[in-house]
Image 1 (tube, one colour):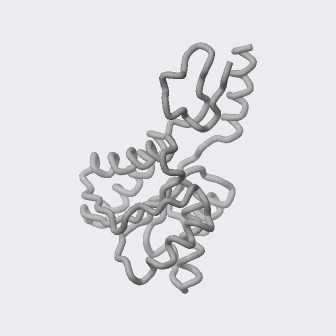
Image 2 (image 1 turned 90 degrees about the vertical axis):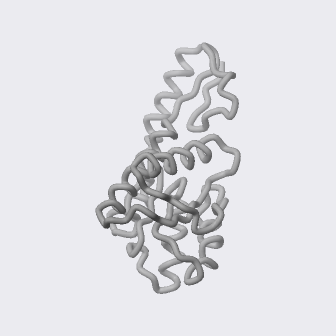
Length: 181
């Protein structure tokens, strides 16, 4: 028996009665980001936006599904979202996000930052603050609602984050493993 925890297999055909997945629905994560952004921009009367996307690990299912679903949610809401730059592959890493985003500050026009997780979103916050720019000027959205991510939302530095329940996933994985045994 095998339990995949928080990392949906790239080949879902492996899932059966002896091999299961316990984790969040990555489609929902991106969808919530897209819906929040659509409401924000529609509230400003803006239907055309340029975004910078911070990708997690390329090829990983969570990266792919979070990215596809946020862009689809924007499209479904009538928002014409265009890339301000090519996506930045940052491997879910705060320091990599900061390093890759910093050169874009002041040279790239964008309306929002879409991040596949909170750590990368907070790397953007740090990069902006080091340049003396208020990160709240343009919405930065993340996923995980990590401790630092929640604090970023509370402090007004992140616009929002989508909750991923690590405790629930851990408990679910233990229960699933016990049931499989």
